[in-house]
Length: 279
Image 1 (spheres, one colour):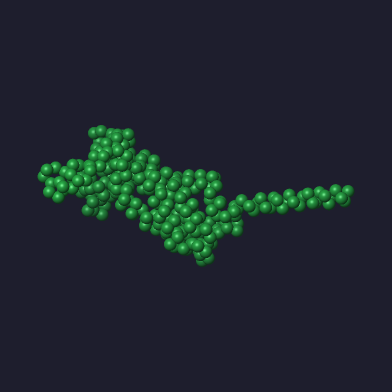
Image 2 (image 1 turned 30 degrees about the horizontal axis):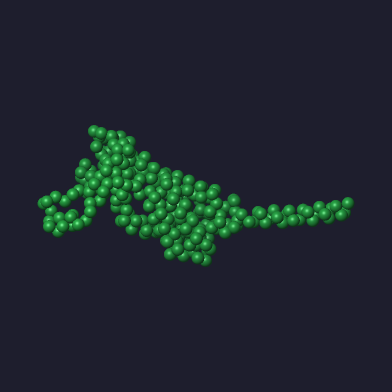
């Protein structure tokens, strides 16, 4: 009887140790945790939804911004007024209804979901590589992680941005422009040829430089300046978010801005929703 109990106790001990080892092992390194399929899907889906929600809220303002930036003749008269944005939105609503304020929004959502998903997903992966531990966390590394993530996301979604801007720029009411029609126009467009009235130097350049052809390359017009702007934009965006998050977790503010992590009590506290939004 006693021998059976000792044998049973010996059998139970390895199983208990094995269970403890299995319970600890999945924690792994931060990089291993962030490379699981579940984490990738959650991060991408959450980032895509966050981008869609933000763009929907500012959709009317984004439409007016594009009309002002492109110097649309119908709305150029509003650009010099402090209340020009409100007046332009009111006129668009009067002419085309609420749908006019969200013209091109379907293309926006079609672009922003993969854009935001790729950006947040890539940022987490690059951040885990560049910043493997807390000791490696510096502003420059945070900036680099965000910049690389922004460049990656804009490369894969830039054609959708070109379509979105073209749809938002259209203000004609006599004919509705479809997404398919806009894609066809962009694909078949060719740059304007220089006529004989141009200067001699321009004519010489036109004869030596081949005329770009229509095709998929048209969907990447303006990609170079966009890329140059995305590097500091995305980098500063993530740097500011992470830095603001550190400030909001300071001991003086933590009781009001943070909540305990129920899944991992030993982990740093998570920010409350309003503090995360502020960051």
